[in-house]
Length: 381
Image (spheres, one colour):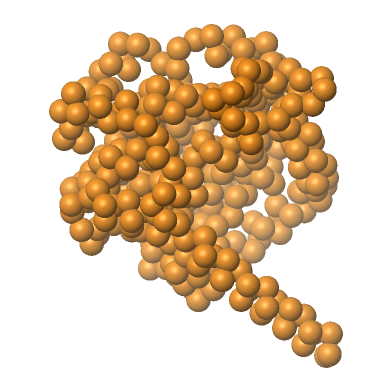
């Protein structure tokens, strides 16, 4: 790991990643570790024909598991590129998803418009899960006060919990996920945190929160075990089985579904726009565009010159940023001076509030033992 207090700023000669990532390293030509790691990863992927067979098998399995039911899968829709394109493909594949939108109180009007247009044109049923705002606001306030880097854990963990609960209620075995390596493979370890660490979330909220989380759909290891092993629900990142291009996906969405662009990855949420465009750069010296753009460089979707030109632009419009800052502070019930003090406070590692690492290690040991026992029985037979 690089020492941030004693390091010369350096930018990768292949991507646009730099030493704002404390774990980055460089070879003799100035290329960073992510270049070789990505090539190794890509080499491990199935060839196109194998991938097509895997996709066909996966779609057939989803249909078979949902036979006789109104829906054969659950699909979370934010209105962003990845989930919107996944909805489009689900229609092309003949799947029957229950489309779910998680409303945490931060939707932009454009996101709502995109979602409504998509489900109407595709003819899908939409269920909107509205988060209890009093609880969710208190949880987000706690994360700000804790001074940790990944405030989006509050949304991402609760989304997973909500999707699993909904799938179980309808007897659905598959949750389609829009996560994909084509746009999301590269993300430094220190730039976010594990989304399903309920110990970390609970401890942060216990220390800084005030409102009990009675209605929030939290999701930790015990929930993962229950829904995966007892309810048989699996989350499938099916975009990894298609030749996914973000630019081409946008073109299809605009032409076929009347989709409108937000101007940034995950900017369909007002909060995420402010978090990624202001909080991360100003408080944590993290510009996630470097990772997102580098990912697209590695996949050949854009050139390094195009990425460097993009990074010369502000994260988003200064006037809108100022407006968002005032709006977020007011909505979270922080005074502006209080909010400014929070945003200037020194970062605190998530690990300082405790983690579920020991629990997960114990669980993985049991999984390994069980797997070995099953293999031994199979060999004897």
